[in-house]
Amino acid sequence: MATHKLLLLPGDGIGPEIMVEVKKIIAWLNARGKDTFETDEGLVGGAAYDAHGLAISEEDMAKAMSADAVIFGAVGGPKWDDVPYEVRPEAGLLRLRKDMELFANLRPAICYPALADASSLKPDVIEGLDILIVRELTGGVYFGEPKEIIDLGNGQKRGIDTQVYDTYEIERISKVAFELARTRGNKVCSMEKRNVMKSGVLWNQVVTETHKNGYQDVKLDHMLADAGGMQLVRWPKQFDVIVTDNLFGDMLSDVAAMLTGSLGMLPSASLGAPDPKTGRRKAMYEPVHGSAPDIAGTGAANPIAMIASFAMALRYSFELIEEADLVEKAISSTLDKGLRTRDIAAEGDKVVSTAEMGDAILAELDALTA
Ligand code: NAD
Ligand code: IPM
Ligand code: MN
Image: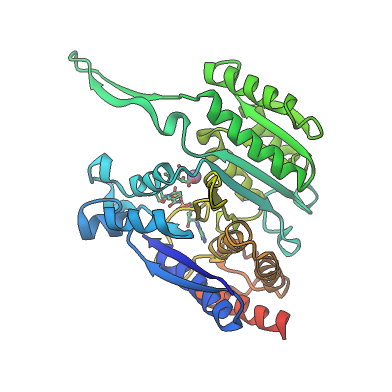
């Protein structure tokens, strides 16, 4: 029986509300008596800024570096609109990703059978959908230098962000995509804009080269990222794994979220490279959505993206595949029973609260293991 150290970072807005529901799942797994989870909790985002004037303290950063996995809620909100850029809530999330070297962000979008009607797209377009966006997470325009606003002295200012990718960054993320594709539909579509961006030209070359050197059994296609966005909405089932850069991956995964019905449904895993000695990889699990200030405090948040992110932790950090499958099955059968938070409810559906959804998933876990 192994013990796993989790650092919970609930964050802001609906972050703490959905984290409560994950804690219930953790307690359920601990009571089950197989592996156990020891949890510690820290502050990130606006919550950390309010406490220490930083988007994450050095102490919590150190805890994140030594945890077996970090479970992250969400950060941000209008309360912190005017804080200095360096300590804005989102800076805490970006620092975690960068310092932990979490270069591979896995964002699966699946259409649960019961939710085929919840998408704004026609049911036949999304029924059975199961795609995986592999987003590069520690490079590109998010981190490239220079990144600044300069005063041109003539009443004009210039805002600069820099898109930078080195060969090794593209190579390692494409390997992740090819390897994951082998466990699923064996197809990768790489998206960039080689028609306008030098980094897109390099991205395309390195993905093609990596494919030649050991992954030729996987089918590889390339698509310009703008066309990729269009194809995601037109016929998303043509895709299996999509590999793309940090910014395109951010936008395309929000698009993919709406295929599944709501941003509140999309989980993600942010993974580092395996340690050569221990094989352990640093990892953080975070829903794709943000702190949803418009619904924070109302009990309307959908906890499924957060709970499904924890299921990804069971799968990718702890190899607890049976438990991961169980949690995902519990989510699916809860939806089959008609429970809906407001974001996924159709006309006439009974709407449940965040806590009621979490409790229903727990009850399903009991039922599935009775
Ligand atoms: P958002 O994802 O917070 O919300 C977009 C819309 O989706 C809102 O209408 C919201 O109510 C809804 N929504 C999101 N999650 C939901 C859930 N679980 N259940 C039900 N509805 C849900 O994006 P935004 O409004 O553009 O950003 C708000 C803040 O969150 C900003 O400060 C932004 O920077 C931050 N943000 C943080 C993260 C993160 O922490 N990982 C991700 C995205 C945005
Ligand atoms: C996400 C978010 C973050 C991003 C923000 C909050 C920094 O939108 O995780 O998708 O842009 O990566
Ligand atoms: Mn985003």
